[in-house]
Length: 215
Image (spheres, rainbow, N blue to C red):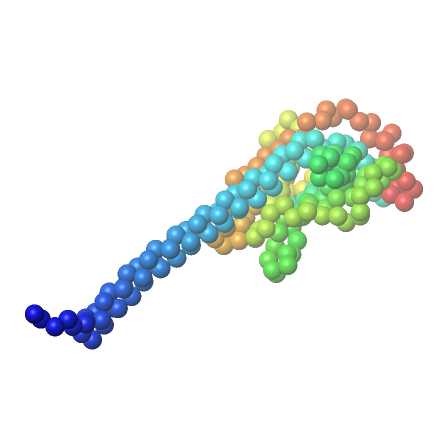
């Protein structure tokens, strides 16, 4: 009868080496899956951010109203300001945002906390209204933005301009182009037309409701 014997040192080392190879393969697979999931989640979050920013522009510009919030020198009422990098207009925000009633909305490019740039919306109550909104309240619409370009067209015109030079009226359409930071997702050009009829508001009469400080 043969005496019982254990594994040799070489057999134990071979088994350990094989186990290490198997564990390394399992770890690589788990790590690859985790990275893929993280990338997928980041892409989905970015798409949601872009979609929300575009919806903000669609909703607020489409519902823009020709209410003056200040006057220029000579008493010229201002209902819309816009150049190639920022715009300001009056629109009503939905109640679920906690900002009821017409607001003066300014959209511009601003530095973010990571020393990059973000597209930012600032809100202020329409002068003379009873709405209580903190002056300078703001929301970040889109992060990781390299540049923004805004263009404007008059109602019934197909000619685009980098600035809006008629403070008494709303533009017929606004074109929004956003350049993301390197590696960021693209932004298809967005064109929004304010729906309000040009004769819906008597702008020169409405300016008399402004407080003296805004005239």
